Every structure is written in structure tokens, then in C-alpha cells.
Length: 373
Image (cartoon, rainbow, N blue to C red; front, side, top):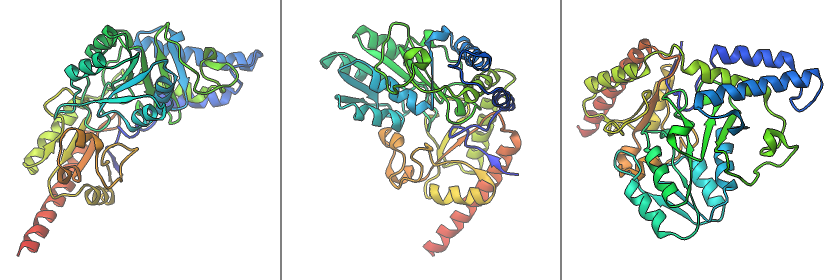
């Protein structure tokens, strides 16, 4: 039986989501049709919209369903009626690329060694520029798990008349997420990060904020996003979101146990962003001289799935851009592995990883000694 420890890449489908999806498939019907089957499909979509809205503390009309979280980020960034875009140095690649694709000036705000945005630098950037700005700041980093001070950043942004968008894709289901308390104007979400199906996302849009359409079509989603809604995906998203906050295992206790045992067997290991607030499920680690790509392959052969960082950029020879922005050396970046726990994780997973890791460390040490001799 394999040990899956890459929940930040995608979380296995929850049984509640699977059941909701199958029911939706059996129903059929286009939610834009006015006959019985269509009205039944529409009812499912609107019920799901309310479920997600209630979880986030918003009204249902603020929830726009999208194809994926990347689309939600693109919609917010490309659709915002602003003159310039200000983003943190550790945003997801889809945020950075969407910002660059607008053709508008893009300004990057640095982060600390722990991977947290420099709020003073953010304020200076907003104060020194011309025109209305859009600030993009993720709620939780997908690699390190570091939590960003979004609420404080929102207050600064609004002080300078800027809009603020937060990518909360990695945060939903792992920490409480309340749109109103964060004070943001837009928020991106993704179903498969919380145990829903892949290919479904959402953009939460504050009342009064108007975006240029990204996808034109038949007027779905109150005219804001064209295309027939993915009914099965949407109901699965809502079911997963509800389940994520009910009867969850103590993921933080499991993560802390993992890190404690990891440090016991490899005292020189680095745990990135361990000194700042971070997601309770995420450990981004590196042991110098234990190369990430080789280690990942060896772990996979032993039945353990982890990653070298973002699923969208893993495999790139240059290593993590996020770690580079945090000032981590190229040599250590090449050794970085991300372990992320989720609803399927158990203490047995921790035990299995530590056993295999200890063997890999011992083998690597033996090889180094042999080479030195």
C-alpha cells in the first residue's frame, strides 16, 4: 500500500465528494435550461454555491464558479480595472504569469527569510507608484506553508485606494478562511486541494467590484463567466469543503510528530519557514548533499509520494523560485522536498517515511565516505 504525502499538489477525493458527484451525474440536465431536469441541475449548483458561501462568510452571489484555481487567479488579475499590479515575491507561478500577461507594470515586493511579505516594503511600493493598483498576496504558500498577513496587507492596500486579491487555494480546508475578516476584494479557490474533484474552482468577488470578462459565452454565473457550469464538479467541491472542516484528524500533531522524528534521525535537516506561522500540514525540508530529485525517486520506489515543491514547477533544474526569494542557497534548494499531510494521513505514514528516510541518509553518508576515501 502506497504512502501518499503530497496533499498540497492534490488531495485524494473525499467519499462525501464522490457520492455527491455520482448523484449529480445520475441527475443530468443543463442548469441553464428551464424544464424540470434543468431546474434540478440549477438547484444543485445554487445549493453548492450557498454551502461554499456560508463556509467563507459571504453571500452566494459573491461566488463565481470557474474551471480551476488558476482560472480564478487569471480572472481576478486580468479582469481588474487597474493601472499596475503589485505582487509578493513568492506568489504561485499562475499569479506571476497572469500579471505579466496583462502588459501592465508589475512590481514585486520582497519577503523575509521565513517567506513572509515585507509589509513596510508593500506600503512604500503603493505610496511611490502612479495609478490604481491591484495587490496580489496569497493566504498560504503552496511550498513552505508560510501564512501571509493578508488582513494587514488589505488594510494597507485600501489605504492607498488599491484592490487586493488573495490566492487562498492552499489555505481552504487547512485553516479557517473567512473572506470578510480578511478584508480582501477577491479570493481564488480550488476544489481538488480540499478533497474535491480536479477541474473545478471559484473566485469570490466582493460586492461592487466589477471585472472584465475572461470567458465570454451564454451569460452564466450572473453574466460574469460564460460556459455551462460543471454541475458534478461544483457539488463535489461543496461536499468536500463541508467535509474538510468536520471530524478532521489532528494534522498539526501529525506534522509536528513527523518533524520531531525527522530531526532525531537527521539533526542537520532544514525545515523552511519553521519560525513563522504556517499551514498545519506542510513540511518543506532539505538535508544538504541529499539531492531532491534522487531522493524523490528513491522514495517513490519505496511506495512514498512526496514532491520537490510546487506541482506546477517541480522538475525544473533551477530549483524552487520561492526558496530563492527567501535567500536560500542554490545548493540547499537542490535538496528541498515538500511533505504535505491530509485527510488520508496516519501515524503509520510518518513511521514509513522516517524508516525509508533514515535508510537513504545512511546510504548517502556511506557513499560520501567511500568517495572521500
